[in-house]
Length: 93
Image 1: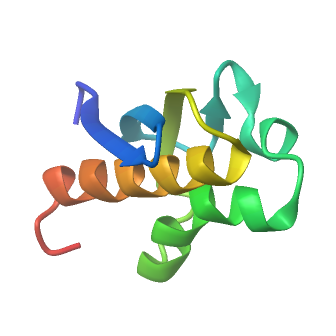
Image 2 (image 1 turned 180 degrees about the horizontal axis):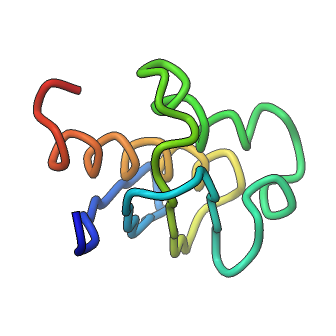
């Protein structure tokens, strides 16, 4: 896989544009590590949940641009965007 796979997620007024590519498991949100950007466990679990459920936490690098809403809505939008990108990447997911 040489190109990015894109996914779009929305939650309330938050919109997340997600790019995934095979890699080592790095997740960046708005240029920051997702654990720094989402400052509590409930919020940053949204970024990890689709990967953890599939057992592929260290298989993809993910870049996210998210705008609008609060942190929890943004986390939900990121979760949806990652999920959609993973489905485009492999329909078996």
